[in-house]
Image (cartoon, rainbow, N blue to C red; front, top):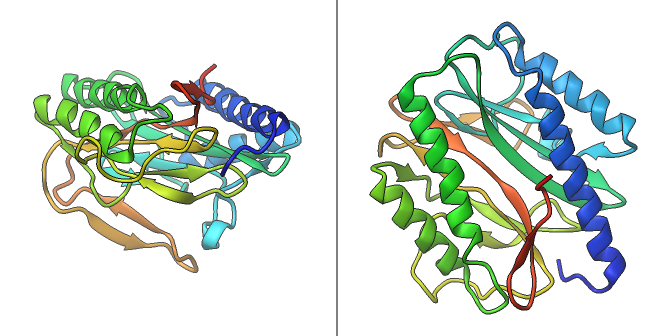
Length: 251
């Protein structure tokens, strides 16, 4: 999306801020004993109470308002009667539509007390996202973002998911360009000032080939690590400016 006027930026900022507030709200409920369905209901009610719409609901047949990806689920996990237990990690991915504009963000949460290995991969995913965002300007490329992410992740002995990544966003949920978590400096798609993208590296503990799982009555798949090891992810929606960026989903 090219931001054609100041009001578009304001609308994207509103969508981004509501999305950030929703994630913050849900964090208070991520505790042992809650089900992912209950988190979904909380998100649905909160979003509607703010006069917004949960973008994932019925998007290409996706049946829920948020994605809840627990432990070895890489992304697009479907809320159900799964009960979160002490030691789990869960990525909660939320997207709000405000005045026709989309804000998209995710965060990996700890459920109770988690292992050191869970803490380490989650920290790596968060820092990898920031490394990617720091590359953004009106003169950079998607390859610059991917290179920075992959370099950092590799140095920490983890593995990026290459087939899934960030995307353009604005009046559409998913738009060009694809924003990978690997790449070469100066290569890929040149970023356009006054457009928005998401940066969302997914980090796995091993290089095992991921598994695709069909979601009934949907064209969307969810993904699992091939060996049941952990995966973590963070995501922000970012506005590209002439000289840098503005993170829209940061409180």
